[in-house]
Length: 95
Image (cartoon, rainbow, N blue to C red; front, side, top):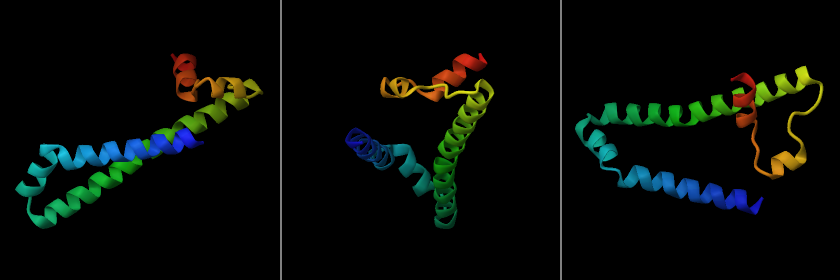
């Protein structure tokens, strides 16, 4: 649990650093009209949230469907503790 919190802080700090230091973000903001820049950054923020949310939901539902089809959980507690994820399992099962 503590490592998850540390990973979250590192991820947030890295992503904020990318946005504030990357010159292309600033060039877009300066080149656009203020009203266009506001809507552009709001739309970008919504997509930044939406894409991982949809991907995580899809993987969660895929795990539930595959578990229901198999009649048992696909990943044991030991698998989860070793870092095996449903994403890898779905990729190997579907492909």
